[in-house]
Amino acid sequence: MDAEHAASGAPASEPPATSARAGTPAHPSTSPMRYGVGMFGTSLPINLVKGSMLYVYVELLGLDAVVYATVYAVYGVLDALDNPVFGHLSDRTRSRWGRRRPYLVTGALVLACTTIALFSVPGPVADSAVGLAVWFAVFAITTEMADSLINASYGALLPELFTHERRRATANAVRQGAQLIALVIALALTPVLARNVLGTEGSTVGYGRLAVIFAVVAATVILWTAFGVREDPALDAEPKPLFFRSIGQILSTSHFWTVGVVNACYGSAMALVLGGLQLYVHHTLGGSALDASILQLVVIVVAIGMLSVWAAVVRRKGAAWTWRLALPVAAVGFVPMYFATDLTTGILAGLAVAVGYSGVLATNDLVIARVLDADAARYGTHRSGLFLAAFGVLGRLNGLVTAAALASLALWFGYRSGADPGPDPGQAFRVYLSLYPFALLVVGTTVSRFIRLPAAPQETGSPDGPDAGPGTDPDPGPTAGSGAEPVTR
Image 1 (cartoon, rainbow, N blue to C red):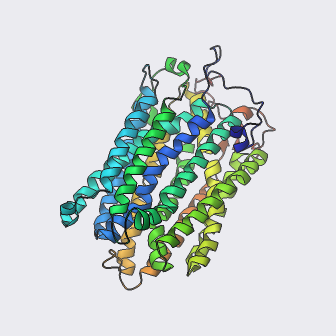
Image 2: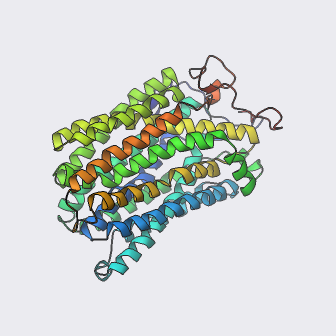
Image 3: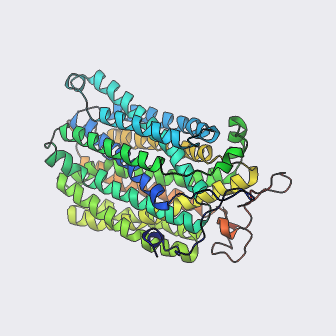
């Protein structure tokens, strides 16, 4: 058994991937490792942004929290709107370089430049309230757009490159592992690296230097993955999806609304955690930069370790069953965060978060991939980019949730910035990092109980698959009278 199959427990003897359409010769397959490692590059800069942008701009540079929340609300709306555009362009592209590769390459270069600019605020700009707000708005939004451009294509490749769930699970395990390693660096190590190694406490210099390093590394990794992807040329023969017709069909799909809402709840909860953890450690736990790094490192390392446990549950019970289990576990995991008072109790609470977080990571993309398979089978064309982008419209509206949560701290607790933290910033970020994520995941858990998911690709039509039974659609193909035939794989 090689390392790639060992990551997910898939047998080494699994047959190689074949062409997406019957009757066409198999195309050269993409290594799950080559594809999966790319997520290290996509995750490194954007998690620096999500994990440190609030701290740098509000706590260190003194940007008013209400101004930050306003810009972040615009950020969330634009993030939602540009996703379908980028996804649709990717689906319709036909070029000698493939459909997805041109956007991965372009996005990697743009993301590197905007990330550096976001964390390298010139002195005169930082000294002007208006100038700081404008700089933040411009580069936060352009960084978001570059991230959307990359992920519209990168996410679409998972169901298209790996058409069997076991091989798909291998690729997903590799990429989630790569994402967690990026989280170790971009979240857990960033406070110490930026405030003790590359810079000093209370200064933004270290964050600027770290942004340069992360941007260069991320671009290199994304480009390495992009040039190693082997897209199926048979997909180029499919009709190009029409935007408005596709949007109408996607919006009429029940899974878009149900799975999409669950995904949005999970994404919003984690966005609050990523953005507020350094402030939670500082104000609620009374910790230092080193304490913030230790807490995040422990949580992420445990999450990495738990991936193999959750993968074993997926192999035994199926992705859908495991997904429904992971969501309430993740919700309950946030409760202890409310009662933590120091680093030790914070770490113990963080372990509970890590268990549920890892479970959703191990299953969420597999559930979404089933929805994409069913859509391709029903309508005869792969439009994974647009469908994922449509999910992103719901999921990336977490910017609005983050903005509302931050604004509520100003309203209820008087927290406006590091210079004006209000009478009880500790309680403010206790609520922000515990009660808000818990409430969001409770909503997601409730919705998940009413969803009937398509069967896994190799289980379609088989009543004995691990997910067969209540809560699972045994036939994800076209409905009666639709006139569409499933695509044979």
